[in-house]
Length: 189
Image (tube, rainbow, N blue to C red; front, side, top):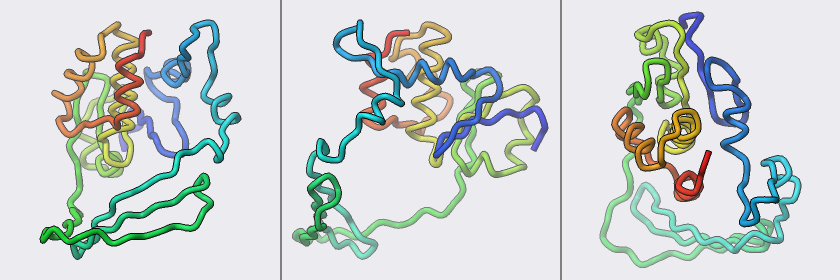
């Protein structure tokens, strides 16, 4: 990998390199409560977490063979899992796509967005000039795109729709999860 290419990886830990500073990332992850006088950091929110406050969850799962199952778990994830088979709809299962996603979106000349596949492919990385930041997560769809959208909103003062559109043009496969999407819509730098 070129020595001056900087990567920011979003999984279990963060790397603070390039133009995106720890302060930039930290300010994106601040919780904004209804009462603006009360600010809580992500660390405070995590410390106040309780499994007892979690909602009971239902997840619809489609197996490779096309079977559809409804999984239920309660009691903060500690209860016994219940699995119910749903009626067959005559559909087929899913096909696992094992091809590499090497598409790198150029959001700004110094800011790239990609998946983990591209971040691990030396030939893909060598195509880019020195002094750039590659922001990636596993699929390059939700986490990394959300951080880049928030970064553009914060650093360039863009509205959510403008930042989202610019990132979508650079990497069409982005799709922030509903929670990130909602938080970004309400984000005001």
